[in-house]
Length: 336
Ligand code: SAM
Ligand code: DTB
Ligand code: SF4
Image 1 (cartoon, protein in one colour):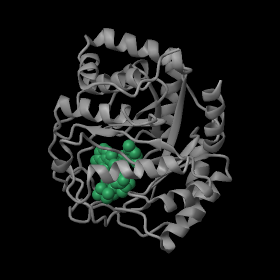
Image 2: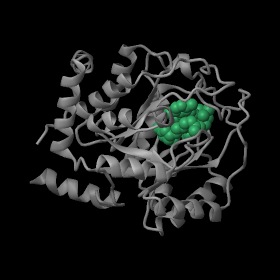
Image 3: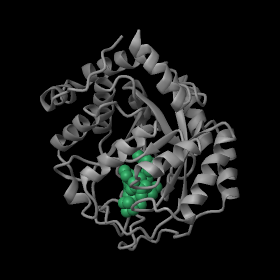
Image 4: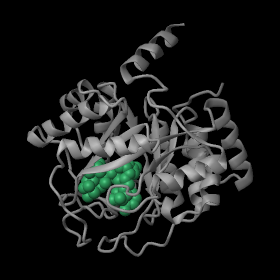
């Protein structure tokens, strides 16, 4: 079995990233097959439970109040609407529902109480529940864990060095602190980034180093291609090359062998052949359903047709155990 390392250096990661492409894919595919059932892909569906009007200045984001993006701003959704979306996602093959809110951070108010109720309700459908709500303190993470939250998504987005170019309204350290708070509450961690922001290859490598040097690797690492949105400062960024996606996915797969590497935003711009290369390179999860948070995404039927063609199948919910159980199992394994 592959060794799980937390001491990757930038030099080592860079060497992997720059491996001749076919050798890189071959190595990543080998690591993938040693550590995962390569025929299974975990499917998450996204729902934006509170859209737009966000006080942050993330340069890529259509939901920041300061950019005129024409996004359909709305207050927190009723629980019934979220449950209906979860049922639809489950019927479409999704094992996980991820609820996003355009918040800088969670506040201890009525809206958070509503999210807690949503988490409980979706959990009762026997689906894994994920939230992405911005920064979180230990107590808030514990409340979400107690409600049955499976995963928390909080992306690093880019490297520590590049971060200030993309976001000025919060720090990299705050991002890392939230990830620590999520870990303490025994919720699984989903954290990755975006390529195509105008970052350098060194920035990508630096971000991968930060992720792979965390005390425990994130259970899920989303690799997003920027979806350029009119009105945001990054609206005119050129489209990310599929080769860069493949290099990012392969490198993440090799240095974090047990992690689910998520082929995330940007799939509407990718052909089936391009996506197949990403699965070959070790991508083991996707977001499905016609919308990401505010931008389009392939619908369930299109993805099922792709799965059929490629011989892939959706992964069942809770196949890796429930988070708290999982922690208990891992402790026993560590003792042996
Ligand atoms: N407000 C919360 C936060 O920022 O943590 C949660 C929602 S936020 C929209 C979740 C993630 O979506 C961001 O961290 C970013 O990685 C990704 N994202 C947002 N806009 C994007 C875009 N235009 N293209 C690709 N990824 C994007
Ligand atoms: C992640 O890494 N990508 C998803 C999810 N986590 C929350 C979000 C992508 C958002 C793309 C832009 C939009 O639809 O608003
Ligand atoms: Fe707000 Fe999150 Fe968008 Fe940043 S990424 S502007 S925090 S919704």
